[in-house]
Length: 187
Image 1 (spheres, rainbow, N blue to C red):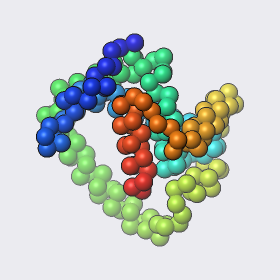
Image 2: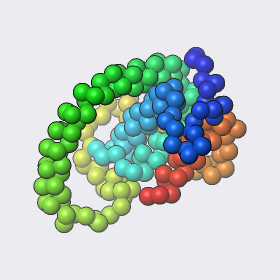
Image 3: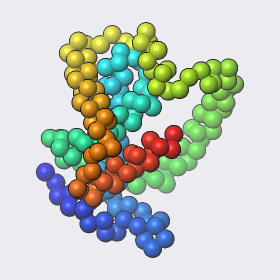
């Protein structure tokens, strides 16, 4: 496994004004953690037999990954891929900004049109309820993948039930837990 001791020191995370950029290693770990949480949230939607990932799925996935991510046997690989992606993004930063701006303008126009049509549907219920009602939208799933997703979600529900009592000793995990708590409370 790679040396992740830089997580425990906290050194270099922020300057006196708190605005310093995170070191690339921490950015890569957070990217890998977020990607894992997105994938896990998708599995939780599958476990609910839904075609839609809800806010609840995402929060549950973040809590699951906070407990499981650093124990993954493929952590080195995920970290390496995320670090390479970040380095690739830095290399293309100048040329990518122009094309992103042009694409963003097109997407904004499209979103505006869709937003006008969808205004009547706003406020139809909160995210958690919507996901539970959309079971007919789920695509057929391999029974083995469904069983695995259901089992993973059951573990995550146990983690979520004990979330308030979980007090990790590791400073990095405490920081991740605090961030998840803050994100969950803000919505």
